[in-house]
Length: 76
Image (cartoon, rainbow, N blue to C red; front, top):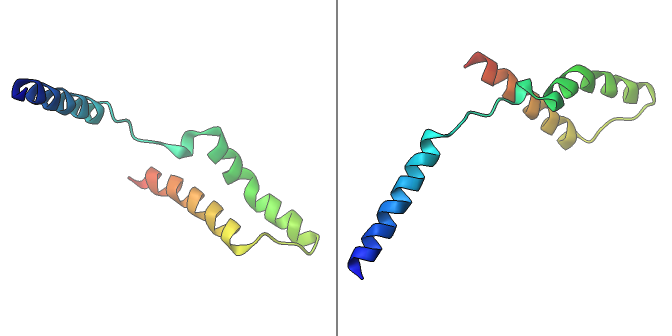
């Protein structure tokens, strides 16, 4: 019974190590979504302003954070 438990533990360690080795950094700045938001979000905000409308602050903040993360990744 103890040998089986030890084998399971060793398999789990091996799988965890394999996942760490295979980790690939996410790069949102190269995705189509990021590029579209980066290019057109300010245009969209301006169009809303011309209609005397605006997005809620939390929505603007989320888009800014999304874009900022991609720009920060470019600096690293």
